[in-house]
Image (tube, rainbow, N blue to C red; front, side):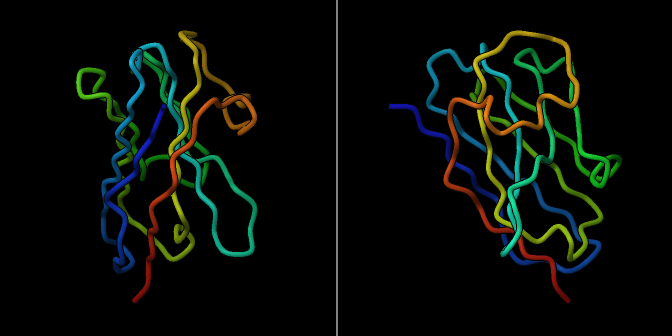
Length: 129
């Protein structure tokens, strides 16, 4: 059984930083591209960032560019989301997702949640003063 377990969420103030982690039980983690999505109360799930299976390419939604950084450690089977300069609009449950893919190209298609094979249960991030 495949599991993705997110951690690192919490309550922070505007301007603070957090680093989320997603640990995967995938035997062939290095063959999976990974993404982060988020969902705020009363809103649809939205794409945050993507990283290819090799870690060589990334893709972000515009509102988090230059603030968020996605990375991965294939040895540890973990993907990270470093979030800086957080603001209340970033408040949401954050989910990681895995897609069986070794493609190095990135583009808007990676934001489509339907292409992902596995999802975690989410971790809450709240940004409030």
